[in-house]
Image (cartoon, rainbow, N blue to C red; front, side, top):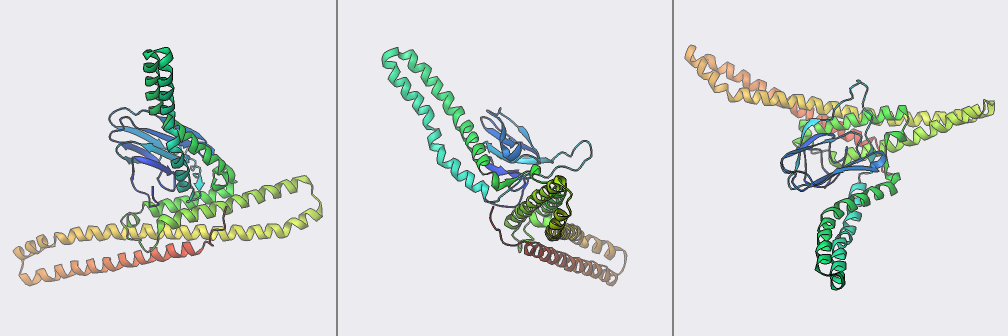
Length: 362
């Protein structure tokens, strides 16, 4: 899947990172006959859970916010029918894992290179059947032929899923899970992801009205870079706690004091980045409100002729003109408001992007 803003559908074939390519939630496909899917759950997607073959007719799947990736192979597409379920105890949801935005394409390339080798398995079984049939007779060939069919149907999907899971684990430095953060880091990452979700799910973004900001590229990059900083801060805080627990010497406290000051500076800087994203999300929400109001006024303006006819039927024609002019003025004023809100949203997005330094790797 090429990078792009979230939509309410998932193509039928491909692998998609949750929170980068697809939004968590409940998805439905109209006909999954003979297809399959795999949810990469657990830390870093190391615990794949799948279903194969899917029955004919509609089927549904719940993609959790904690899932790492979703792989699908169906003849149609998936449509989101409900958002992710909130926790029953009312507690805030855990932030979702965050991956380097370039990781998905890299894994797709690796798996694609192994795909031809996977298909050699059924051919190998069939070749063994042909050789063995000269010694063991046609029943041996028939049995091996049936086994080759089963291998051809099951081996590609299972083998490639395992290959992808192994490659994910080998690239442990290319993604972060909530376990890599402490409580402060998880709280800030949750705020980042809430802001990212608000922008990507906004009407003005889905309809391309924020096209001056490349959200499809910028937002995943920001989320990943902020998560990296939060993970480093969590490790340093843990080291500080260990140092304090090892002894209360005055020299130790004096040595830690300037280091804590630097850590506080980093926390303040990353908090400003988070707040910039939240301002961008709020601007997108405000632009959504202006867009909805603008559309309601357009619908009202489309009926203006009915009001005109009504007024013309009851009073003199010259009394109808001020009413129409008032509607026109209201429409122009709201259109100006919408343009201003969109400009503010674009400016806020640019400011959010400016808060982040270039990627330093890792």
